[in-house]
Length: 129
Image 1 (cartoon, rainbow, N blue to C red):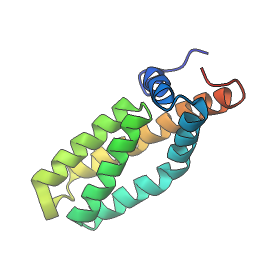
Image 2: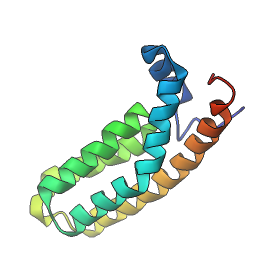
Image 3: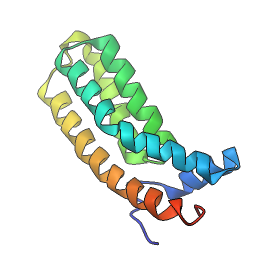
Image 4: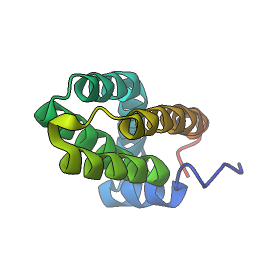
């Protein structure tokens, strides 16, 4: 199966499965990442809109770290950009730049979830790799 490696590094997912020596653990992680995406993004958006620095940092780090582990490098990179903005702007984080980045994160996240679902659903019955 040929998939868009620009959104998801399936090599990173293979490495994660190898680390656990079990494809099921990796698929379980991906399934959890997929199911938690909307809540993660909503929490991030709400924290930024409320200019809550602590909650925004917690939420953006969650997106960044989980995305990196799931092989979603572009999504993780966008979250890192937002993290830098939050650090620089502090309580003044609600700017057109951060709001545009939130929308970019949302779009990238949704497209990433589509790719991960394709991998997750196709690998669930095939033993993974």
